[in-house]
Image (cartoon, chains in turn orange, cyan):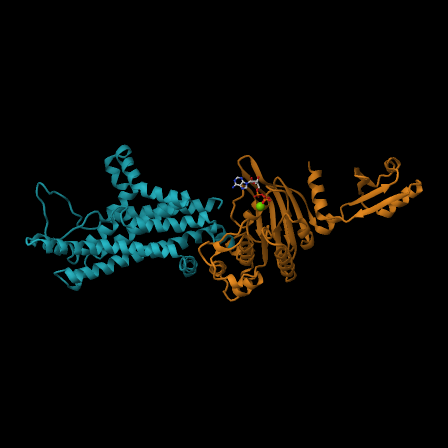
Length: 298
Length: 274
Ligand SMILES: Nc1ncnc2c1ncn2[C@@H]1O[C@H](COP(=O)(O)OP(=O)(O)OP(=O)(O)O)[C@@H](O)[C@H]1O
Ligand SMILES: [Mg+2]
């Protein structure tokens, strides 16, 4: 097996709140793993535990197949929640501290600062930075010492659209070099563009995990329209290839069952003598699926 | 060890407030140490009947007693060394208020290494303070002492070691407060109030035999009085004991406190979420 990280039955309680609850997770080498979930679902807590900031109540995790230690953390680049640095030290100085901790040379600090476009501000104190600049520096800090795994907790928080696109490209480029990435994010279209795998958390429990392609293939949304909606609805009652049929404006919207395509639906309706004025297979997004997964768990 | 110190050095070398406080500390220390002989000179110049003053100056700054006297003044309870303790509190609580301890740990520092790194800083601060005492003692002794022989100069320098141990333990105490309290302002207030709190506890809850085992008393008891080998004043009006030698058991008690503080910090850091 090629697991970079494996998490087993991890549980963290704060009083009566289960921040994470019996969480199992496996991240394979080279994957870009998206950790999704609504606010307070336990993403940051999970990342905090695997970086040894938070002590779990139960369960265990392994890095690179071994018992975790501070030595394994030297092979990981991480950011957690908000950018954290010594406010009274310069950007470069802050990065040097991290390089020293990781026992890595300083040579590529300049290079990394250029990557996140902070090179000309390297001598300025961290506290003088804007939110986006702080976020960029956090990403820079994660890149120090050529990590084998990158952990990013909402890395695009506070970035401008250009910055978001740059981070996306950076993450993809990093992953192409064989580095695994674990990413918590609320920007689902970004996750969809970047990630190879996702896990969906809710209230500390894992609702789903798997390759992004599989999530997207789970079901398609179909839109149907006819001059006489009543007849259409009645006709579709006999067709079990569409679930969750409901009205959205003038249209009927539903989920195609597995293996059911738009032409199957069309064929069936033509046999019934119904002519459609509108037929559209909605471009499935991760967001749709995400909301769907959360909805089903209710 | 060097790596841990380099990490801490990287944090401190461009931290202006830290250096300002260190220089302020050294300045106040020097003012008090050099202020006394200057003050005595001033008094002597104001009066013709200055034999007593001159004699007093001579015995205080005579080798080897000067080491005991000067380290006694510099280490008195929570007097001058409180400034060093405040510096320690600030560099520790900074790690918690700015949450930088998290980036330290997640980047690959172990919690034990974090503790050791800070202890190295505390060690260096104690060393700096001891060196300052040593250099000013050497200067004042050489300019004032009536006996300047190698034997006299070296005699009682063991008080410098005791001074070092006392300051180091006191700074570990400040470290402990900072780790438990985490907020800079609160920690400083507790540090400042602690001598008072200890006195209250001492007189209300602790049997007299055990008074000297309370933390601050124990640290303070290492060098508990000045001394001079030249004159021993003892009259019914002035009946005070002077410390003649360093007590081994005092050193052990102080060191045990150092170990105790370190152990609490160690387990606290090991178990807690950061
Ligand atoms: N230090 C703490 N004390 C008490 N409860 C906490 C603490 N940290 C987190 N929690 C709780 O744990 C749960 C999970 O929080 P966590 O920060 O992991 O969520 P998240 O998925 O990262 O959310 P977000 O999307 O808002 O960043 C929340 O219910 C939160 O209230
Ligand atoms: Mg979070």
